[in-house]
Length: 294
Image (cartoon, rainbow, N blue to C red; front, side, top):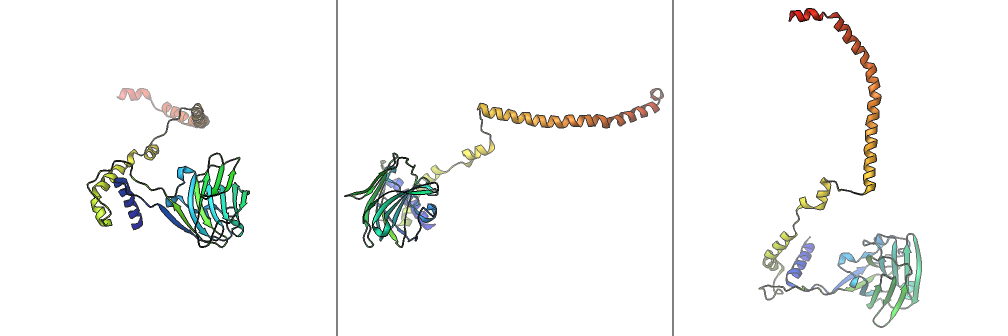
């Protein structure tokens, strides 16, 4: 919880004063053994990058450094949470660190699309690489001096999620470069230097700004669309919807009418003895004597 509070404070400081964020994130991936997307769910074996704040540059590119003896995997998935069987799997250092390949999985079928012989991974040294892709289906992998893979999928997949892992006996260390973020607005403050304050002091200094931001972010639950939808029915002016509603009303009225018609004949039959009893009682009563009495 303290970690989340510190992260929240970092974003507050950035929003108010424009302090730069981290420029790189390091991730360690354990050896997953002889597992890959051909036999296992990518959601279960890959490390999802988005929760780390790692997003592709312009939505189509990653630059990273990786240190592994062999089999470093990069996943490009059609699902944001990686829970999909529609994906590309790039294997760097496959077959005892001698080959780079791209696999394409669609549904339950996985196919090897392209490959090239290349030794790019080292057990004790980082290798800098990039992965690019486009909506046209072109995927490239290389470094500053050479492009190892340049392949175009004739039936490109929509890429929404990204992941990494290492396997086949190899652990991995990854470094992803992040674009430095600064406040582009004209920030105004009377505090000349924030670097000389502790976390507790920053909380006191920024308390008024934090209060303003919290008040600005407060939401009236009664005005939420989910609350309004829960209490009201959305109008639907489509002819098909009106037709379905009319049919439902006709069926409902027909069912009730049928029950009433069936019961009316039975009610008439059962009411005959009552009428006969009433006539019998009335015939025994001297109506004229009752009128004279009153």
